[in-house]
Figure 1 (cartoon, helix red, strand yellow):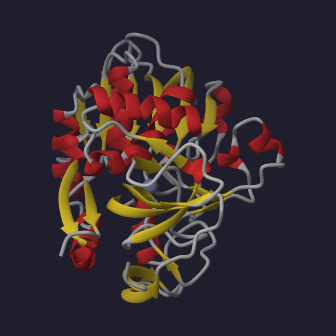
Figure 2: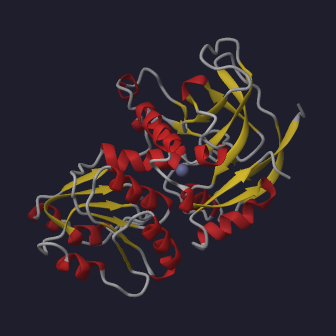
Length: 351
Ligand SMILES: [Zn+2]
C-alpha cells in the first residue's frame, strides 16, 4: 500500500477552504480497522463546511466525508467481529466516551463529547480511513457500495421519522425541505404507513420536488408558488397535518411548521442552521404541539436501515444522482449545492 493518499481536506473556517491534499495513510490501533473506501456520500453538512456555514466545531484540517462503505484492508489485533476483505459500512460516531450516561444507554449519538468523522476526526473522502470496530456493520453482497454509503443519511431520516415521530397508518405528514434528508424522511414516512405525505420546498427546488413525487409524495409544494399554509388549510378537515418533519437547514422554517401542524400534533426538527429565528412560539403552546429534535442515529437504527436498503423496500435510487471519482469533488459539491442533483457519491478507487 502506498504511503500517501489523496484526500478532500477542509483546512480552515473561511468559506471554500477545501482542497485535494496528499496525506499519510492512517496508522490503526488494535481495536481499529483500516477501511478501503469504496463509496462516500456527499452530505449537506460537508457542503455547510465547504461554505463555512456549519453549526458545529471543526478540527481543522480534517478530511471530509462521513457517509461511507468499503472493504476492510487490515484489521487490528483486538478486532474480533470483522476481518480483511469483508464489505462494511461505518457509523459516524468515530470517538465516544463509553462511560458517558448516554453511551451507557446506547445513545452515544447525543453524547456532547462525541466526535464524528469528517469534522472531529479524518473522514472518508480519501482512499483509506481508520475506523473503530464499534462503528462497523456488515453489508450483504446484493447491497452495492454506492447505495450502502447512503445508510448514514437514511439512518438520520429513520431516527427523525420512525423513532422520534409517531406515525399511524393514514397520518398526514408534511416534510419541509426536499434535500436528501427531507426526501428520505418522506420515503420512510410512506413505509411507516403515512397517508398523505406533502413535501415543501422553494422555487429553486423544482427538480428535487419532482424526485419527491417519484418517491411517493402525494403533494409537492413551493416550486411554482404554491402556498403550503393554504394547502394545509384546504387539506382534510382543515386543521393541519399530524406531523411536520422540518428537514430544512435553517431554524426559521419552524415558523412554517408551527402553522402547518394541527392542534395536538407533532413537529420533529432534524434540519439545523446557526441563524436565530425571529418569531413567537405562542402557537407551540396554544396548539399543545410536541416539538422534538432528532440528531444522528445509533446501532439499532443502522441495522434496520441496512435491512430496508438490502430488501429494496427503501429505494434510494431516485436520490442517488451522481457517482464521481474523488478528483471531481468540487463539481459534485457544486451540483449538489445548486440542487441539480440530490445526492452525489465519490468513489476514491476510481480515476
Ligand atoms: Zn450526512
